[in-house]
Amino acid sequence: MRLFYGWRIVGACFIVASFAWALGLFGSSVYLQALTTAHGWSIAEVSSAITTFLLVSALIQQPVGRSINRWGPRPIMLLGAASMALAVPLIGRVAEPWQLYPCFFLLGIGWASLSTTAISTTVAPWFERHQGRSITLAIMGASLGAIAGVPLLLFAVQRLGLGRGLLAVGILTAVVLLPLIVLVLRYRTPADLGLQRDGSAIDAGGRDSLLFPHIATALNRRRLLWSAAVAFALVLTIQLGFITHHVTLAEPFLGTAGAGLLVSATGVVSILGRLYLMRIVDRASVRRLACQAMLAQTVAILAIGLYPSVPVLIAASLLYGYAIGQVTTLGPIVIRREFGADAFGAAYGTAATVIQLASAFGPALIGFLRDALGSYASAFLVAATVTGTGCACLYLGGERHQARQR
Image (cartoon, rainbow, N blue to C red; front, side):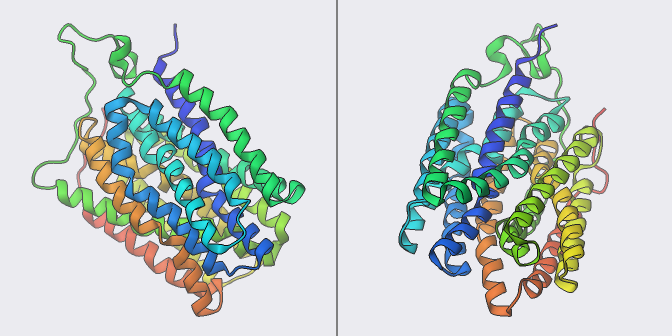
């Protein structure tokens, strides 16, 4: 039996995600640590430049989703891969703080074109029965990016220096991603291969027979959409801030090598979180799963704020990391489940813009709170409040009796 081509799409997106998260989201913590160490610039100064990359990404979420729907993923992801492969070496060549901004602007284009919106929009047309599992598996590459990407970035910078190390990483990115995208991501939907979603043959009417009933109606669609958008915006604002500052937070407790290992371990447990999610997501309430993950993150960062110490930092980082894998993945899955495949692009494009516009300020927010309050511990007490508010918003905005997959 031939493998359904949709799973090849998922595999390619897995590799794309591993590079995107390693060099974009998780890589930002390495850039923050390396640039402040190499140049003596303040944490807030570099964090503000990193915020540029997140803002740029947020502003082009809708164009990315619409362009993939219209032209397919290949041209958009090629642009993203080229942008990221160029931006990373340029970050290693900056000599003045203002030069960081165009570098992170370019990185933002790459991140938007290779991350959650692009990947979920690419995968969504290919699956119905396995809608949650396929998106979860594709985005699981983000965990590989954390496990391998951060330690390799740190190793490259320490062994080769900031400039040559990031140049080597940029070359590797181009060599791996560009051919992969050209060869695999050449089809837009299973209809291009004469198939329905999940690989079934097209029926006599030419229609996909595996439609999963959504719950969004004219009466509740605004509440469903905006409660999810606001909730994930609040939680991911803190999550992006945590990830960006993770190395800098852990270094005084564990040293540079130990901080890198902790970030790597956080990526390992995020895979465990995604593996568990992949097993249950297509038969469970996705809002409830997301609320549970958000509650775990609230507890983790509250513990760091109240009891800053090596054992608490390690345990809380692992708990937070386990939930990272689920929160990052469940955003598009909630929208996909509640709005259906046909409305997914427009609905998630709107939600992703709100989420990324808000979360873009995460690194700068944590940096500002740390400088203003005098420590990461105090900053994380505020962060726990924000995350808990997002959890409550998601829970209160959902339907109490959601339809489940049969």
